[in-house]
Image (cartoon, rainbow over all chains, first blue to last red; front, side, top):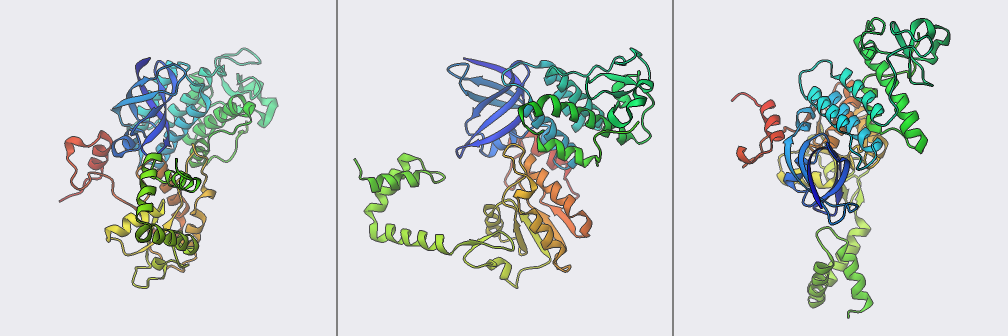
Length: 251
Length: 199
């Protein structure tokens, strides 16, 4: 059997001297692995860098086999990011998160589309790409079945002045309702509240750090910790580049 | 059928890069035919190399002396330090003959997939070498591979050395010598355009 799709390279592991075992996030077939014969050669190495978008054809005798990739370049995003440490670390974090968190061979077309948007933002002149990255992580949580409910206050039902998120329920909490809980709640960045939140933080980076702390906590507690695994080090390195020092912010 | 000694030799040779069981069998047959001229000298050479070659405690290069010949060579520029991923990369630069400074071999790159963290590489020793070098090193050239992992490692090292006041550079990316634009991938062309310089 064989099928053709569009895929984004997540990881490539050397197999023998000339081949690679490559994992792609495909639009219609989800996270899928296959053998790329000759992928470790001069031409293949440029293609199989994490983040590159390829036209791919998977073929195997049976669906459960590892199978083989035949690919062609669609958009080699990665080359544009190699000189920018922060954007490169964001790309590595996104690819390793999908690789570590997403079940194999389960289609997630929405996540594929969101990842394309993230790659466009990373490689473009988009100044708000860190916001897009945080939104992408929120979307990843949703795709995995652990979406955050940021539409109304979990305690009062209010739909305005949503400033915090409960670490227990993953639901938004209004400023008044969050007051008694001190530092036990995550701050909800204004850009995630969609007009229902408080004022944006004075430091534009503070909202990003709060957003990364929020998604990092739920990724760890819902996806990695239950399987006695740690989040990928690439994400940790990306967070460190933002100078993150605390995981839970004050009120 | 071959004897157990030959089978064992075939199995061992087949584990070398570039050799499979079939080519290993051919190599063994060739060695057996040229026992005195090739097999025994090869065996001696292997034993001697295994016994004498050690990693250099200064740079990580492989040599029969520690510090290695490159680290001991007083004709080399002490102010230039080139950071490479592996000894193979060091040998490649030495073959080119264009670099006359010193080296530091990292022993790999940061890799989330293979679980390689900064502590698994010779990065701490690099930082010590640079900071404790009493100002001898003036420029560090990061010659890691142009891959996501290679460049991530380069950025990490650059961060670690950022407070030392030492110039940090990296190798140029772009069109290879003899490269025809028509055959280059989009990524290389983009990088080459970005790194263009006035004539």
